[in-house]
Image 1: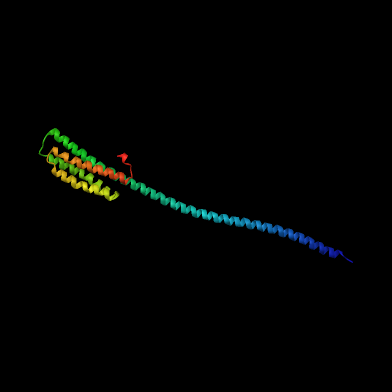
Image 2: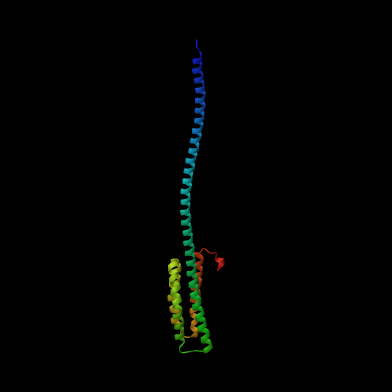
Length: 196
């Protein structure tokens, strides 16, 4: 009996099984690990893509908020400027009336007094028109009403002035308008009353 060829086949099968199963286990582990790395790589790519998308969206939101804040700040500055400009125009008028009055007291009664008053009013009207236009553009209807109501009252007071003593009729109108205007500024800017 020749058992050697049988043993060769047996050893070949056993060795083949060992090598095949080892190679199969190794290849299985290799491809499993490679699959995990590939899946991880794809997951990272997906996460990176999502991060890029979220970042772009966040940047757009940030830019919009930035523009909105800039606009809001700019509008606030223009509104503040409109209030300040009108108050400045009132102060110029009050100072001009005061100077005219002082000049009248120093020089005594003059025939050209009404002409001097008219010159003061004409000079002041330019500043007033600009200031009231800014008020109409940037401020509330309540504030615009204060400005619109002041002009006819001022004109009526000026018509009543015939001499230097009559100038005292104008100042209370200026002060009433100034006071109402400042009160309105406190309301529009939500300022505490203690700042007045």
